[in-house]
Image 1 (cartoon, helix red, strand yellow):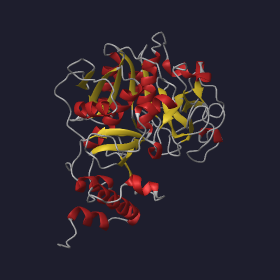
Image 2: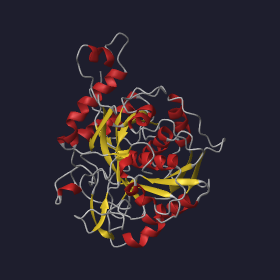
Image 3: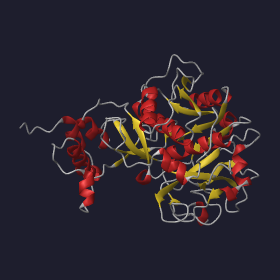
Image 4: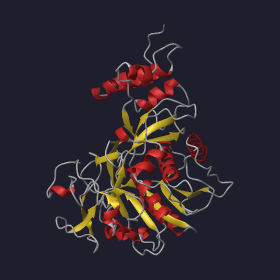
Length: 429
């Protein structure tokens, strides 16, 4: 056998040793996928008490922080499988419906809009695969349920493709499908990850006919331009959500805008309690006190004189993350591609992934707003503060060290990482 190390692996080995452990896990994962007939399955290993190998969690390709650009807020664990049947251990739609007590709700054709950057060339087909796998009703362009447009609202020309942002878009589309399968979906693809392009797309999304809510799973550092850009999120009668961040304690924009519902993140697991689920603050969820935004009148916490993040939350920990289907990637479809993706040496995904980040929690909450159908609200940001009793209070977990401690540590009532809590039906929205 040729013992020459392939160039992609050689480049990997020349890097720092931080990912060496990931190499072993990813190799084990690929070997499991390509194992000959008769090899022990993960289920058999579990039955005898062994723990199957897990792929490393890697940030989406659009998660890199670049000065002057927004970045997406997702990360995932590869589950090499292109068969169309979910084998990832990620949470499925019925899990989310159960955890957040959304059974029996109906979006009645309301539209949830998603704003991201660049084009996902496989958005429609990947969306169809996800919905088919979980027996959700089809949502296609032909039926008028799904529409993909550029930042100006036109179906062409679309922006250039980007595999990292495509993974983000798949996550967003799948979470809307999971929470509100009866909703229509509008995907607005900004021309780039700069503020001008994204806010142009935001206005397009929020003013489109039938849109009840808009999800933003991206963020950037606050700066002197933040206040001037806030107007693009001020759309009366439309609920706008924004991910709080994936870097632990600290604030990002537009989550800090007073015109959005800032969505933090939790770790969500099954439990033997009456709810059947338990949640703690996710250790990487963003939170804190804005340095730019004035405090809204509906926030009454006393440890921050400016806007406090977050308002509410939902599952975001990739270790307890959601199943997503995405096939847009830079390396094709093979076990070798799966390995490169798992190591972060290629971008995108090759089938089913278990993902998280507050990129997951933002579209979840946007979809709950659509289910609630509270069209009379003039400021959706304050809506949860009017009905905090209709939320599951998250009282444990932390995302860092801070003063006052409630800005980074969950506790009874309001706290930074989880806000007022997670959905318990639609009553708070």
